[in-house]
Amino acid sequence: MIYLDHNSTTPPSPGVVAAVQRGLTELWANPSSVHRAGQAARHAVELARQSTARLLGVPTRSVVFTGGGTEAIDLAIRGALASLPRAAEPPLLLTTRTEHAAVRDLVDRLQTSGQARVGWVAITREGLVDLDDLAMWLRQHPAMLSIQWANNETGVVQPIYQIARMARAAGALVHTDATQWVGKEPVTDPDDFDFITCAPHKYHGPKGVGVLVARRGVRFTPTLLGSQELGRRGGTENVPGILGAGAAADEAIEFLADPSRRAVQASLRDRFERTILSALPECRVNAAGTPRLWNTTNIAFPRLEAEALLIALSERGVSASAGAACSSGSLDPSPVLLAMGVAPELAHGSLRFSLGRDTTPAEIDQAARLVIDAARSLGSTLSHLTPYPSP
Image 1 (cartoon, rainbow, N blue to C red):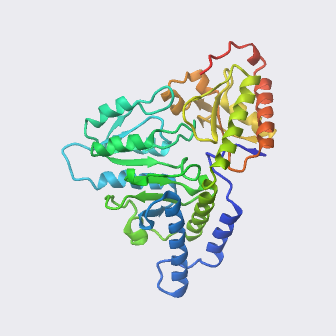
Image 2 (spheres, rainbow, N blue to C red):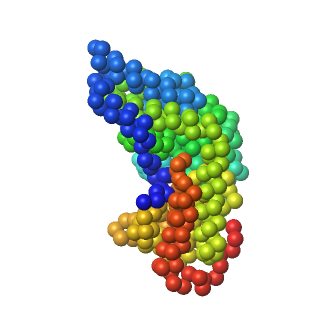
Image 3 (cartoon, one colour):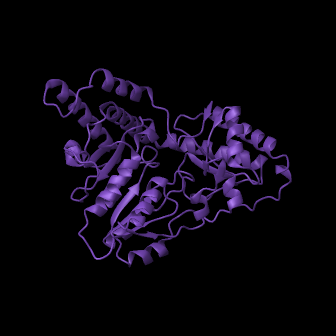
């Protein structure tokens, strides 16, 4: 199996598996207990917190462990809004249509329940935040801004520091969903954000644990009550998961210390794209020419449906993802691609391929051949289509 779905999740590394196993077999005591076994578990949790803080470049005590990335996002947004002084009308929350569903669904719920007003900042055809539209929204005194650092479907990287500084200058709290960024690229200026969230399973850690970074002094109301995590997130800590997160952070720090490793993987992504576009010139890379994560490509296959192509690839031994959601046998085009102005017929046939830090040249070359074979077998008329204009 050639695994090109690392933006969905990553395989836990051997070091992470060993750390999780240690949490299950040696350090299984409750870290809130005062006895020796409990304090050994507490010490291990705090070491993992230190490792995670080093990865993010933040103070150790600003790190809050949650039950996953979605919960971390909920705690940042819902918790921050709940801490605001009462006002005559609900606070204004700014975000975009290209956010992960964990943000989109949450802000829709907040708006429906009357807990927030939502301002949808425009997105350019390149997938970037329209800074002029953002400036317009910021003049309306929003309480908070939530913008994804790097998109999970296209890999588009936002000018996040510029966005954050604009919002902070307007008096808004700033949250960035850094789930796809952390572990793939360094976090250099964390003080520009009030909240950062991520999920260790995106950088070879375990599932079931998330990370919220809350800037010192920023207020938020816990959504799960309890004394754990310094009163910021209730519930007994997931010691095995947190230990795995710490090990994943240490390994990510080592990976990020050598920029050449990212450059090599970026060249493999580019080679994969060139090979497919050379054989199938009707295809296009969504957001080509826009700054993207080194590991991500989103390719549109005209007149093919993503679901059928995914099945054909799986049968050939390639794992990828569609930029769309399957529900009751129907395939809906990705809201991310539609927000970028991608035609629905192209969004229907778009697939995301995401490399890992250990993806090999042989895997990339073989995967490209199998993608070409699957596309040709599914669409015998593909080679006769009118070529799509180059982006």
